[in-house]
Length: 374
Image (cartoon, rainbow, N blue to C red; front, side, top):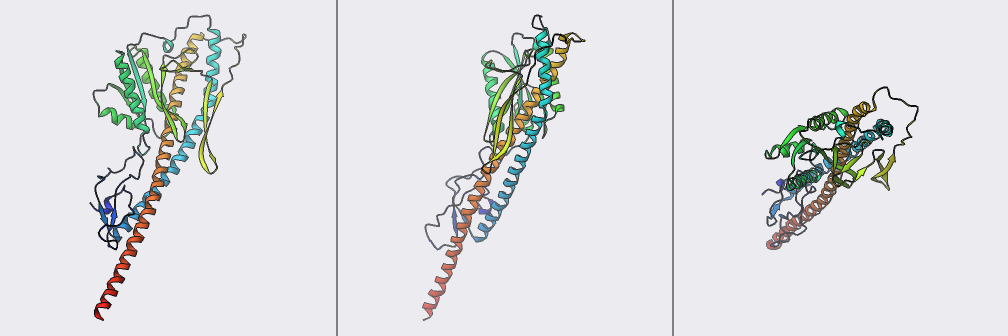
């Protein structure tokens, strides 16, 4: 195996056991440059010993320097995109606040009425649609693997309960995974894009709306990665349909979040390092005015507003998933950069030792030749 082909090994400080002044260096593979889950070359067998000369070591050092530049650039690009995702969440707040306020006001008037809205109708659960949101690219640690494993675990739980399930895959990585497994029923493959917009969210909302209203499925669950911090993100499962009249979002354990409550994240710097600050924001919900009258029936208005709220919730989940993916990529590229710096330092030390050993060996040969002549 050539030394130049080892793109993911650490260099050992140990020279050859046979000759400390040998012109060949010893490299022992023991650790990969990229974090687990990234698209790096396979690890060579631990017992493999690779010997390199000065030219190969110089090539390895240059290769590691170039890799360090790439990973550092990818880290900075991911940080800039996290800020864009943050701005998208903040810019969508005014619409969400107005929508939640109208939903509360309508529900105040419908407290004494029996509301019959398709999106709020609760039926016996025989089949569930799982909307699985993954990323479009790799090099982000175990981000995609975690949410796919969560989906597989949920499918196993439903199968144990005797409930059928179908998958709506969002994201290229999830699409690739489910396409290679034809035994998993998939209703549709969708792509979220590099920056989620209402167009992508509307495509998902239309699909789940048609499945639920036509009674092909009795419940829709959304699986995505909730953004917690730059170093932590949690795969979560939320019940998307049926909605509550007030638009509450509940997880599979029945824990519901009030629609008026929301969390915002802000990417800031603290002591020279990037960090994330989260705060809970509550939308003011003023009491329903008794003099306010609706031109249409409140049930019709609620029937029109709930799909908008469904769209906004899906868009928010896509934005959270994108922020989690970018944060995971930042962490993976930061680890890769640190590993590249350490590997470059180790190879440089080994190169200097090898060069000094070669010079010393040549001096000894000259001295020995001179002694032989005299």
